[in-house]
Amino acid sequence: METLNFSECTLGLLENKFGLIPMRTSNTLTEWLNTTWQLQTEDKVVVPRLSMLLSDNAEHWNEIDLSMHFIGPMFSWVNFTERLRFNLFGQSTLTSVVDGIQLTGRVDEMIATGFRIPKAPFFAFSEYKRQTDPNGDPAGQALAAMLAGQSLNEDGKPIYGCYVIGGIWRFMVLEGRHYALSHAFDGTQTEDAFQILRILFQLKQYCMERTEPPPAN
Image (cartoon, rainbow, N blue to C red; front, side):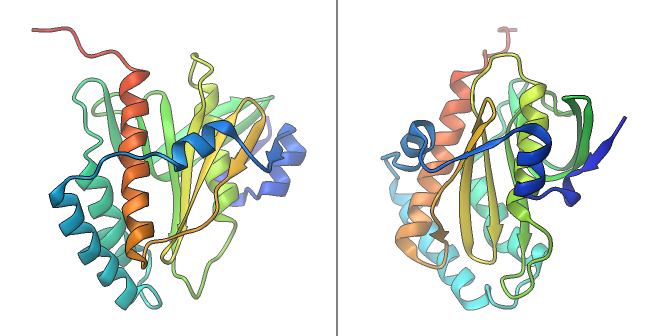
């Protein structure tokens, strides 16, 4: 069986191997990006601080710096841990067979059902690389993880994704064999950073809607 590692994947390779079709627009992506999630007072205090920190450091931070000082705090602020329902998993291995090809690799961050061990992924986050030295194809790597995650879900609902290069965030949606990419959101700009947070809050709401609460004790 042919095996593809996420790190090898580009958008072009995935389109050729799996018949994926890039879409200029997607109603699902547009609805997600245009969320008007109401931010609270504390959100409006924390986000400008993180955005300023990113602005001062994005040009030279490496992946670990980006994760520790901006990406991690943004995800933690939203809090994707719903015990026995879904969780945010870092550096987890994801493997699935799609069209007779084994897709496998480590995902920087993913939201999946499960609590201690990821099961069915809803969201894949890939490749927070230095702005001045991006290697590989972060969009392709994220999309490969999304495609693997799609095969592990049985509800036929969209799979969400995102990749970051320096301070720039781009969001993704995969529905069937069609995918779409968002425009760029610049985390060094406060208003963009606010919208990134709204998008993450909306993502958590989507995860809530497609999972059941655990049985009451």
